[in-house]
Length: 519
Image (cartoon, rainbow, N blue to C red; front, side, top):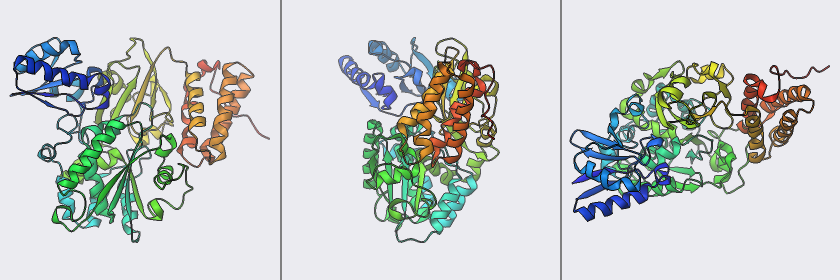
């Protein structure tokens, strides 16, 4: 029997993977070839999608990007145990883009059938949860703390400290909430994980529940991810049927279950307190803190709110130990981060690397330079609220503290590249306009400041008292940084100020402006 792997990932489906799977079935039937097709997750090499892999005695061999017209010839090569073909890239694991990665969180993505429990367990699945079921809650929290894991959603808050706060807060009910409202531009690691290895997320949430004494979890998925929602729904049902969710998990006496909720389509609901408002049935608006959600969160109860990647990393930490995970990374940034390379880039995709690599390595060694063939000029790291970085900063280690030192952030690991045709003044205007559109409206610096900021940048671009307006823009950004309730208003100045600082010529300025002097 010939076994093919064709991704069910959204990126592959967008490139025709569903039709391709049907075509392989039909062609195999026509030729009398016994064929098995496994719908796996994406390997993260998006420029090769749809990527088709064939199982051979020596491992998998990759072909891509495969079109409908290629089906007969690729099937013939595949039937010959991965024979030569113009689209053949050799053994999948030897492709340089994949071979040089350090995959911990994404170790199973693209490898297993995401909806096959036996396949999941054969690749270390549920090992972490089995271990957790035999541990005291405080010991689980200590293991997570010792690993050095920090929140992968952007804030980088130590996960173990958050869990310890919830564990130590007495309450009749506690909750685990997974923030899967991945709305940043250039980010897709949450989606890839949910579609390619949903059981790792379920396992991580269950471990979190056992660790802090929660019996209920909510998985809040953005409305624009219908495929992820469908895969998660099926995975949740499989986990319940097999006794990994629900009452008395695997006869342990421990109980935990998860409810899947669809987001309402608002960017602000990626902010943890606005997400809680949405889960409780209200409009997504930011809450003032304190109290922290870990003390008074969902329905007024202590709540762990973690990002998809944070929770999906928990199983490998429990299974292999905190020391194993902590051995990756640098400084206070331990472990790995799935970096997502997008924008004007030749080889876009997902690269999981230990902290300490550089933007230049990701852009050139993995990304292959610009898709246009022109020189790369600027890179935005950390989503629409991230700073624009010039080439002079591309050798800064990808580390939380190192990026803080250059007034930037890693955020969720999204990297968007721009070539030398980009107008950075236009990008700064877009950043302010984005904030104005997506603001929940609760605080004045964000609600009003973003609108005024957009207007000021427009005046600069029209050369209306350009120098004065540029100084006013910096002063407005200072107000937004210091006075906004949440990161939307508080971090929108990052892309604006970095564009002003590093690319003043695009604003018609000879030098970066300073705020006007006050008496």
